[in-house]
Length: 114
Image (cartoon, rainbow, N blue to C red):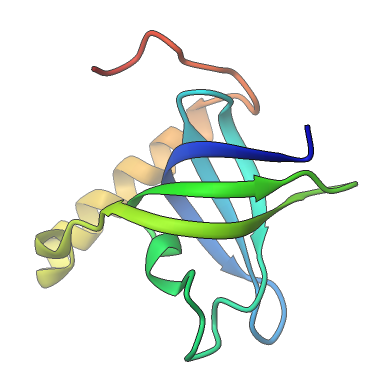
């Protein structure tokens, strides 16, 4: 299975190269995983909105040798109200950091949520 679809919350986004980002994703299907989003810093990137931190997105990932990569992305819920205040961003950053620190890699959570 080279390509697979996940619904993910973007916990962290770290700049990797000129236009690439390494994402930390929290998924129900696979748990916490990391993926490379190639070219998302380019202004014409279609994936740009779907890989914003703290957003809930549906991503098509392609298996790689060391790290998977994002082939396509669609934002399900972007939470614009969250980004309107410094307090909202601080709370979201804190929750994302806690989830990243205390969640083991690739530990699925099929029973979580609706």
